[in-house]
Amino acid sequence: MLNTLNILVIRFVTLAGGLAFKADSWKQTLPALVIGMLGIFLVIGIIILATYALNKIFSKKNDGENEE
Image 1 (cartoon, rainbow, N blue to C red):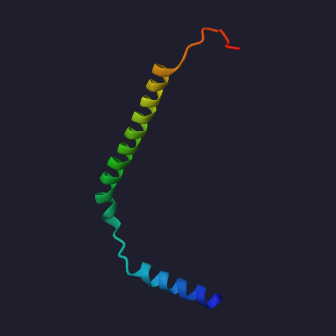
Image 2 (image 1 turned 135 degrees about the vertical axis):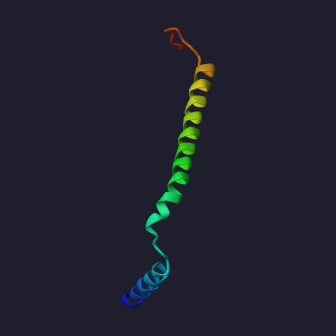
């Protein structure tokens, strides 16, 4: 079990070691991240507003009377 775990860790480290880390890469990826997050919030807002509107349109009003 320990031998298999050691092999997996060594393979992960060698795979991760092949990736280059660039300190300035955030300057290129940050605008895409911001646009993506704004898109997510926009879609969630539209879903919330649509749910609210549908609830207002199709809800039944009882005016305080209970059906028994």
